[in-house]
Length: 194
Image (tube, rainbow, N blue to C red):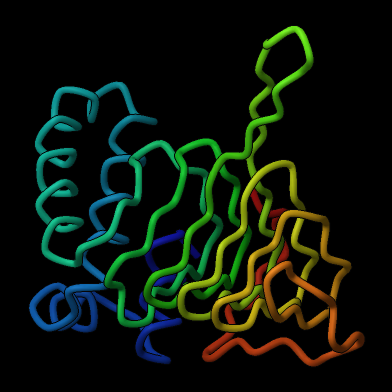
């Protein structure tokens, strides 16, 4: 199953070109996912590289229409879903696993550490598989959010989150462990995530 097929399944619980066309017409939050997948697929093929700039323009327009920032080079696993969309910001160096869901206002961004001598180190989050990131949650820096975790609305995560945990608050605090992942229309794949 291709990444785009998995994304379509997450959005509709079905697959196929018909569902893709419906989503492209009706879903402003799906269009950026589809154009990102198209761009990345074209860049991987020598014959597609000349067409990649067209996909990049389509992606910019789709992101503008959804009011999100989703860079073209971001590594995102199969079955990515965006709920509502408005205000999502994702750093291009973040890594996002499979079956991840982002809600409006979520930020997945860089974190900087400044040493006494003024030098700067920059770090980026890793979001593992089956993670749910709620509205206005912030995940920044050298953070790994473990598989199956949920980051609740408004949480600010600056430290690692163990798998199957629920995080709430600012600063983010683990309020529950051994939780059940919240993944609608989960895509089951055997290949490793990016």
